[in-house]
Amino acid sequence: MIAYRETFLQGISNGLKTSLILIKVVIPFYILISILKETPIISYAANLFSPIMKYLGLPGDAAVAILAGYLVNLYAAIAVMIPLGLTAKQITILGLLLGLSHNLIIETLVLREIKTNYLLLLGVRISLSLVMAFTINQII
Image 1 (cartoon, helix red, strand yellow):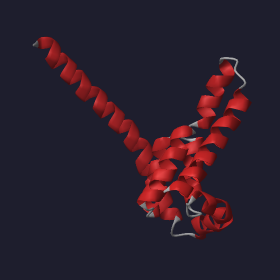
Image 2 (cartoon, rainbow, N blue to C red):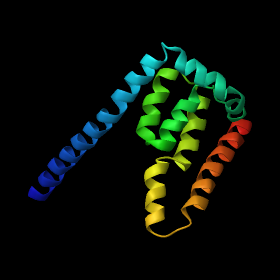
Image 3 (tube, one colour):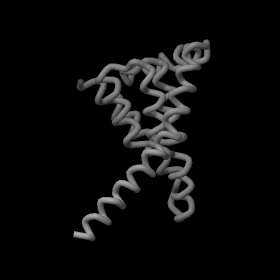
């Protein structure tokens, strides 16, 4: 019985630690994007990326979420996605795209350290994520 109690308490502790980490990432990104939506910056980015994003079935401002996911992590991308008011289809496409290719800076550095062809793998990950997003947009 004691082992179950210790396991339960350890799980609670780990869950709270993970929640704190997520809160530290998600809330600042959410606030930042909410503020930026009130400025011309997001609309400028949306207009800039709209021609490319339409092939993925996404609005131009979703490019900010993709960049956050590619460069930071999935939690940053989620924080950016929330205030954008995306449809279920668009969230599905972004989820697939970012599930295949996220946290690229850290993961590419790790791949470089273990002596892989990290630039090739980076290109494959980004290409695969974009091709799959395009394909899913055509299917659903």
